[in-house]
Image (tube, rainbow, N blue to C red):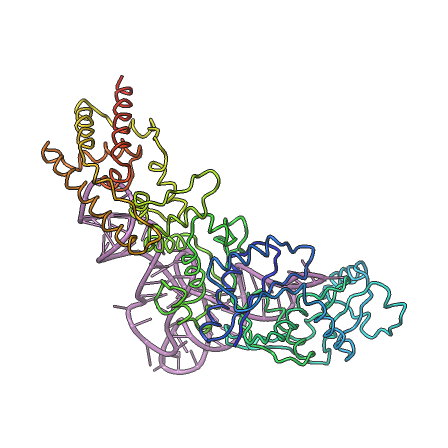
Amino acid sequence: MKTRFAPSPTGYLHIGGARTALFNYVYAKHNGGKFVLRIEDTDFERSEKKFEDDIIESLKWLSIVPDNEIIFQSERLDIYRSYIDKLLKEGKAYYCFCSKELIEEDRNKLIAENKKPMYIGRCRELKLNEALLGTPHVIRFKVDRSPGAVTGFKDLIRKQNISVSNNEIDDFVLVREDGIPTYNLAVVIDDALTEITHIIRGDDHVSNTPKQIMLYNALGFNVPEFAHVSMILGSDGKRLSKRHGATSVNQYKQEGFLPEALVNYLIRLGWSHGNDEIFSIEELIQYFDLKNISKSAAIFNTEKLLWLNSHYIKSKDPFVLIDSINDISGDLESPLNINIKTASLVDSLKSRVKTLVELRQKLDFFVNKTIDYKKDILSEFNFNENDLLFLKSFKEFVDKLEDGIFNCGSIDLNNETDKENILETLKNSIESIKNEFNGFLSKNNWTMKEKAMIIRLAFVGEKVSPPIYEIIFALGKERCVQRIDKFYDYIINIKR
RNA sequence: GGCCCCAUAGUCUAGCGGUUAGGACGUUGCCCUCUCACGGCAGUAACACGGGUUCGAAUCCCGUUGGGGCUGCCA
């Protein structure tokens, strides 16, 4: 049992491609089989190394790992040659010397007559000679034209036979003028030679399948099973394209999505397992079956992807999140320091964001040395003398907090037990701050509700933030005091 | 145009001849609450249409409509 994913490196790994790769991967693993990656780079005009790298990298990021050494079709040209010779010798393929212009003329004529634009078979029975072979030519497949001939196959997803009259199938080109085999020939030879048993691919290949089946038969290969997965559509029901937003896997990574979320989303787009929504890759391998793949096309819905992403972000260890954020931060952002203070904020922020990018952004108040207060936000509040008095005594309170509360000692982050202890230490510190702060409030007959906002504004400059105690802990005494001072001056200024 | 495929809420889907048509995202309301989230509870919304078959159809058949794919010396 063996499946494959065979992208052409003419673009970045597309989410549609990622989904078929995923289907192939989990299906193979579910059945204890192998999953093969093959790069179909026979189109030298459009293939690029950077796309090849992107595809391999993106698959790896998604944890879709092939079992083989990656196969490159461009390195297998000799192999294809021998099979072409065989077809030629057996009269199953023929040389065609018609120029592109001539073909174009034929086409236009047929279209004008309201007929299907197919090759008219001018060279089908041509007598060959040396001189002729020296001129430009392609090699075409000689489709069986006997009356009533039909080619079909059973599709594993549609669970029915799909067949087409041979009259609908052109004498398609097997080898181009430059001697490079076309897609239909190369796939068949490679799939057969690598003994692929199940071909799971996009819907857009259904009409190629009969051609390929003819080739399997002509070359004496066993015909594999076929499963055609419906396509992913954009929000307007049209084929997914750049105007629908991100389409490449790497783009999603850069936008702060977790691979688990993308995998989970992609698999659920067209596949189901009862009412279940959340799947780890291990669970997918356990449950996945072609039986439960939907036949109809699915519209890509970013909202649901965001929900899954927030779900996985919430479940992550803060240190892992810090790594992931640093992994995608650009040159403009300074990398996050890996320490307990950052982790404490990340841990608190992770249930408030939907992407890593958003998470990084919400950390700005902490990462940046100082903050700038925004007039449009602060002008919504009417601060008075009492607020100034509060700030004064609050500053005093913070200043008197024991240094030990903020000091968590040095921790070796590579040490797992240390890492475990971190959370405990963290909890204790925040608990201490909470107790001290509540004592401070009740001593003065103040409540959290009435004082939280002014503190939040002073420390973060925004109306939304993580809980107050956690901010105090993360910021540390010195910066807290600085910000209270700055805020005090700021509101005195606007009062004037 | 021709050929092939598809059709349950805004979206992803469960359903496989008898269900109050189930779940999830979204959305709305409430609870929790130092803000925002998270979480909890409740609500909202669907079988494209028309014919058959059958005691009975979202489920089977045919047609209509709508959508997608292919129609390359791209894959």
